[in-house]
Amino acid sequence: MNPYAKLTFLMSLMLGTTITASSNHWVSAWAGLEINTLAIIPLISKSHHPRAIEAAIKYFLVQAAASTLLLFSSMINAWHTGQWDITQLNHPTSSLLLTTAIAMKLGLVPFHFWFPE
Image 1 (cartoon, helix red, strand yellow):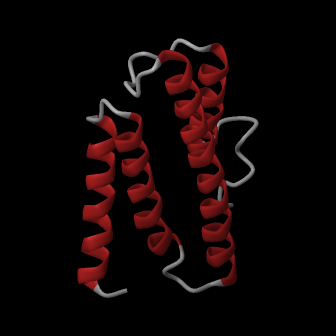
Image 2: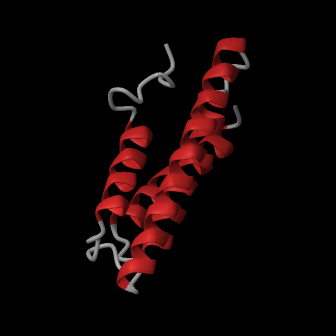
């Protein structure tokens, strides 16, 4: 892999983490998580081995599903509270969906099936 491309992906990874950690709005937190997802996929599949490609595809599909759940959770919360603020998570369905989405993104049990071997 080109060193400049690797540097770009690593900088994007740091940028996405910073955006996610410092956001007060659901959409900016989601955008930071998506930047992380798009930056890590080339780093996972850089060896062009079939197992690396399989791991990257699993990672992408699970992260896309978790991002969908996160956005759905934030829309339910915004519908019931009228706010998109992260600190106003009051609806129980929204809390459950958000917990599930974060567990999928982190690979916690029972959502650890996508972890590369």
